Amino acid sequence: MEDAGIGWIAAIIIGGLAGWLAERFMKSDMGVFMNIILGIVGAFVANLILSLVGVTLGGWLGYLIAGFIGACILIAVARAMKR
Image (tube, rainbow, N blue to C red; front, side, top):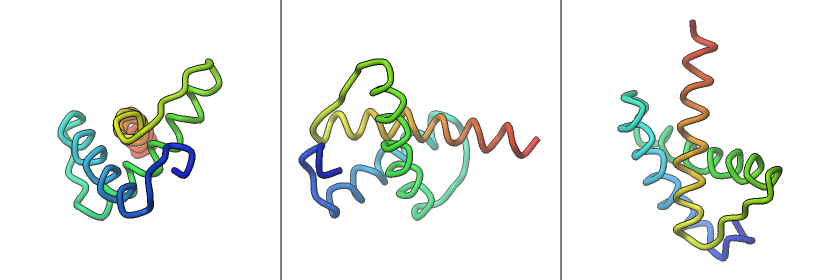
C-alpha cells in the first residue's frame, strides 16, 4: 500500500469499494467487513500475480483495479474449496 502512494484510511475505503464491486460481479453476499478484507487482500494477491508477469499498477486507481481482480480470484477460490 505504501508503494501505491495511498494511506491506510484510503486503503480501507478503496479496498471496501473493490470488494463490493467484486461481490456484485461474482454475485455473492459477503458483508461490509468482508468486502474490505477481500479488497485489501485481493489487491495484495493481484499485485503479486501481476508482478510475476511484469505488470505494475500504481496509485489509487491501480489499487482499485488490483483489489477488484484479486477479490474476484479469492471469491472463486473460496467457492471452489467450498464444493
